Length: 251
Image (tube, rainbow, N blue to C red; front, top):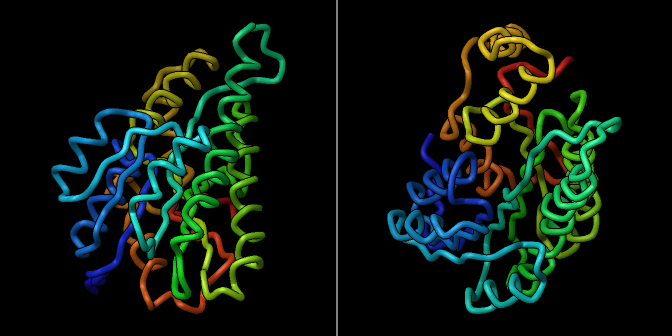
């Protein structure tokens, strides 16, 4: 089924690579007008390629976020996808661990909060907010405490904002991707393998064995649920978290 979002303005954060880039491509193919945000100059080239607008912005900077979104005008769909993933073991003696913990929470939770607050004045009834959580938002993974906690928080924000914004006709849902072949996930794979003193291929085999459906997803494979949640087909869904994990979540 083809979903058309022609004449809709869609803001996607973290759209310079990985899942965010896959989401942006899908929305571009649906006919949407794109505004792409990322703390990465590569987002400008991506926006040009997809026929949209690009903004280089750190989403933890409230003033910068407001300045980036103010010229956009009406916003029909906001995809809060920007995120930071890293190992933060609680028993680490690495002096940098605290800084990384704080940065993960700032980007994944505070940044999501700031972007949403800045976008809301431009959203009307029928608006859609879609947050990228994670399969780990409904479970956990050892040594990724800050990331796991931040994604549990994203689910909490999703449910809370659904209650707050429902009376305004704005729906708020989350997508929980499983393992996807991105720079961030492959970096995490390497770190898990190193910490466990195992080969990366062995760790990957364990990940794939934990899925019901075989194979590792690519970024474009995750985009479909975002399109669905942005469309009129999902008009009666809010406060929900949709898993896209090939059956990885332990039912």
